[in-house]
Length: 90
Ligand SMILES: [Zn+2]
Image 1 (cartoon, rainbow, N blue to C red):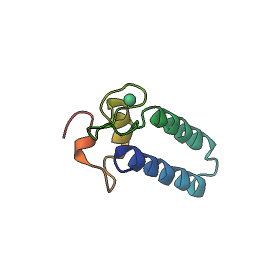
Image 2: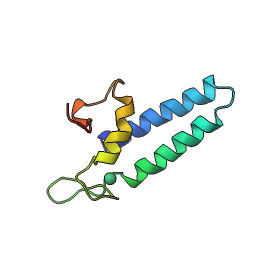
Image 3: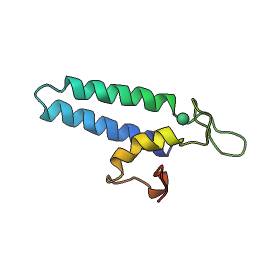
Image 4: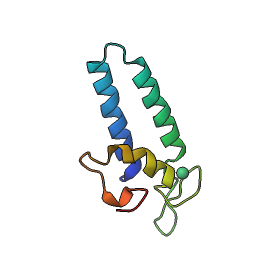
């Protein structure tokens, strides 16, 4: 599956790896990342519909939903971020 959700999870994985390597006590950062990952999972894309679209598993909006876009916007300066994912438009 391509799109914002897997890309966002990759960004969280990168931050978790950096936290383990750089921080002497990464526990709080890793807990924050775990919480963000759980919120993102609630807003993951659901199954593909007949028309090829997907809906958020939680809020049923067209995926990626506003909540997932807001979470991912923290990484809008990283490679792979698509300007169309911005929650406030490009
Ligand atoms: Zn949602």
